[in-house]
Image 1 (tube, rainbow, N blue to C red):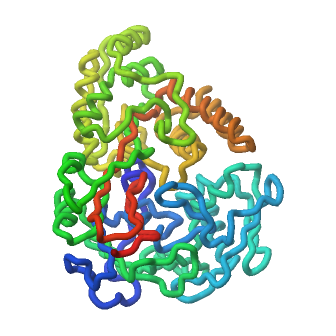
Image 2: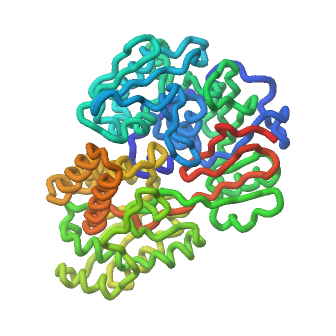
Image 3: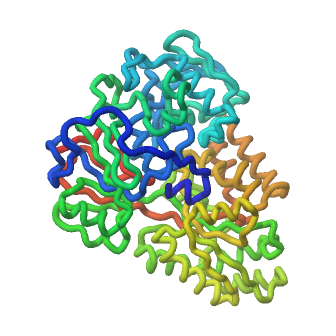
Length: 517
């Protein structure tokens, strides 16, 4: 998963995905015109690296599929990332500062035909909150104290403390059937059952995922195609060829070099995302204890050259933690423009004469293109960096043992939520600072946590944004882990074959409210 395996979330690899699920409808849409004419075919960039259980999945591809298979009480619009009710009849109602209630959509059913009940909702949240389950989503809802069923269709949430973003944040928890997920979690992981507009049919790890319309779905976003076949095409050239040949109607992650090559019916659009390339330093390493060294390495980078040369202009240099297009954008008090003289001055002030270390990088194609330019920028200020490029899982295995100097890697938690609290907590609260880059126990980390906690309880949106701005200023100045750039995500599709299709600002493709033309 680009945004999680790249940032080291533990991967729960599930075996035996091949040919799971119920019977497929006739044919699998292999024809260039999309099978029976009501099948959406898509070219997906990543193979199945994990199963589908929404509590633990860390794979980009199953996570995207889950947007179609499962629902939350509240979901994020895949294009705008704005929260909207799905299984709930409306956004959760605030009873008091620490109590909310939600009412389930009448007649909602899971794909096995059973009714969605308040007990299923309670079970879904409790399994996420149970530490034994090591849920990826638990870190996003630490404010929930308990969830109870008021009646068969009403759920009440009691919070440990006031959290102003509660109504939208619970979108991270997808509702699953208790009798199925609770009976055999492993089987559920490979054969997911949700209440969304599409039901899972089958999956083959490096081949395809097949889903079909759930006819009994009665929610706000019914399937507009009878079937979907997601072709798992890791090779970028093959993915581009699949679109141009008409084998698929849309592809994700278009190589930057191919963006200008789409003409006629084949359209491409690069959408600005939160997705970033960040530098992370091991602050427990004596070479990087002084923040002036970390700052110097940022000032030394010729980010404009990196963007124009390696990414062909498809990115924006970081001037804050979130991109300038984000609603919670705050320009950091420290902006790392290319300034070799300042970099040399900071290194000298820190007493560093000859700095040498190994820079780990993940093996994403665009990251590998950037790697020599980083080395070149640092060499210009007298810094010798050896490059170590490997798969992200291998790199993070070493990092989690404390065996690293510095890392350049991609990350994008915005698929889970787009508010600044979630995005800031991902890298600056809990696991990452305490276990990865050695920030635990520092005054700066204590300050960041205090500001984030204060913002979480602040009911006034303006004051919240101001507090997030203070966190941004702090993490920019510290540069323990900080973005270099926010990249654009190019998506391509064949015009006239789909209705309602839009590219996403996050990894993946969405066919919610999309049909075949």
